[in-house]
Length: 628
Image (cartoon, rainbow, N blue to C red; front, side):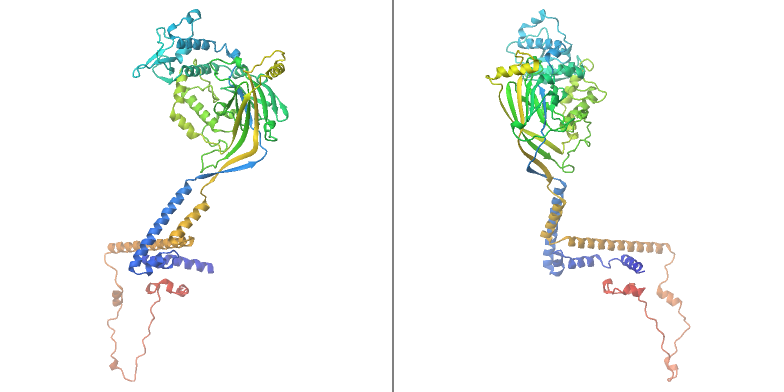
């Protein structure tokens, strides 16, 4: 019952409203608020009122301005980087080693025979243009189909405004010895088309190498994968000796993968089939020691101009991108690589656009067929390959293929080189891939300190080459030499690792304390002052609602009066209509003196709220109960 009375009284008070006008409410707020400034506006004299009004308005504007800056700073989600150094037993990194030459020349020579003859004739024309085709007369005719698809040309730039393009294999081409020429690679959408793209080179050596790589990818793309693996360097021939810490190892401890740039590559401690190895101690004696044979005498002359081993340190279960992140080890040397570990920890959304496992990246990862983890290099290459398969109708030999797509070659896709060159130089497609791919939130980087020395020395090379030759070939003859032998030492320099982590530069606690500090400094306010301000806003809304309702009621009454034929009678007219005009008061003198009239009964006036003259807060708390 009491609960019902409470809600009835609350509803009654809400219906009546605050009981103030806007002016009265504003005066009440200035007189009762805990914020400095408004009290002085209503209590000081006219001049000081104006001064305090200006100061209050100025400082309130400063508060809102500072609040806007603080909120904008918080919503920018800036981060701060912190560096910490730790000490622990660490997992030894995965080590990938490859030969700089992808295939044995003796195995692929029959595939590249016509291409080699073509490039030899082109070099002869470039080096001895005045001799024409003298050497070609004694040799079988050249197959110029490859040449016409992607020709090499010379550009005569004596006249800068009108350069002359000369085909190397034109019969009437005879360039002078002092002629300034620049190597140029041309790719057209189809033979005889004017829709061509040119790549300029300042040296013919660069142009020949790039042209040969482009043509060889077209030839090798038609070779099955198992055949390409067979034509590469095998693990038992390449890895001569292996030692990890105090434990011996051999080529069976390496995982073989096929890399388009370097052929057969071998990964130690990849962690795919077995648990990753831990390093027992820092120092060269507790690392990985390898002796490799790169067989430089069997290199492809026009495909690999650098000799050595290509190696890379990376995380377990990650794909090695040796062309971008690998380093070379030179033949005839002992290369020592000291490793330091940096662990990167980035904050995710909304502080950065990084990903944990690539599941939120809109690009299909083509390297997932190797069961490797996500990386931004894999994403960028997958994005490029996806664009090439959509635009060119085939995939590039250097990247994995999507399902149902074949590699590009000159026979099935005559214009693939033009399409590839156009896509490669397109800034728009490149930017699409950059915007689509994301960095990983957690990453481990290996910083390397590299030193080299000649190995073996002249004093020891005889017995070392004899032993290594016997162990590999079971021959007493020396089958190895300094041009093909590489020794590697890979180890942790120390167990100290650095962690570079990101943390939020602005938090919600910082935002609240900064907002409160600015409000307290400029206005002397607090959270309670904001509640008071909210209260005055609610009261203002109630007054507005009541005024609108009253205005609507008055408007409705005016419309009703306008529609009625006559105005309703007033109270005086109603009283006059019920007055008995025949009744007359007796004169007081007509009555006997001794007889007095009885007092007339009186009725007290009604006690309605509409008749009160004092505000609601003057009435006692029991005024509502009395009306009941």
